[in-house]
Image 1: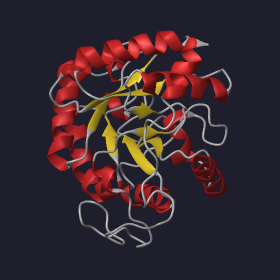
Image 2: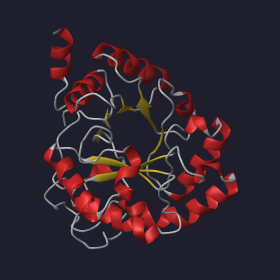
Image 3: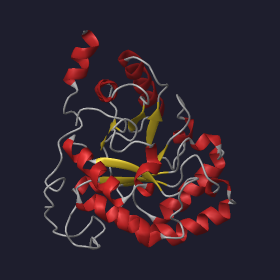
Length: 277
């Protein structure tokens, strides 16, 4: 009961969607924060798109948008429309999607990825773009080749991106040094925030200067008190924003909301796996 009361205090603490979140409006009409035109000219994201925080989404237990960061890039047009409607009906504002995995690769098709971002932004949804999933071969390429791909790709999509994450569980395949080289190259191409995401309970990569915020993965099937404690520890250790990114996979969506609310109560900069917007 005490934890439920604490979580209840956190309701709404992520803030409410701004004037452009769902109504297609905004003081600058059809321009994104860097001044460029949204391709079809119909939606202006909120000013906080430049910073991209706090996150409000669910990339694992929203039944219309499951499969993690690979869902949206591989879904059909009708599946994507259903997903966007489900995001908006929950009051969520963010979606996680990866550029490449073992089932898709948009590094050679930037225009196709722009099309995905356009439909999200035009529905008031802020895309958090992950350079890679933890599957596929792109992440294993030489660092120089990865940098070359980013140089060609990022300038074409950047105006529609809320923020970036280097990849899913980057400590599985990149060293701290390699991640730093890739992230610093990304920073040279974009002024958007760049996040780290690691294996469960880890956040040391985000101690590096390139990391603007952490998308924290928690062990699954834990309590609200556990989530509160780990969130508090990560924030204290990093001194940077920490998004509660991943904490429920197999339990009902309502469990995701409770855990996300607990993380926000502890100071998380929003949630990526369900919560109260």
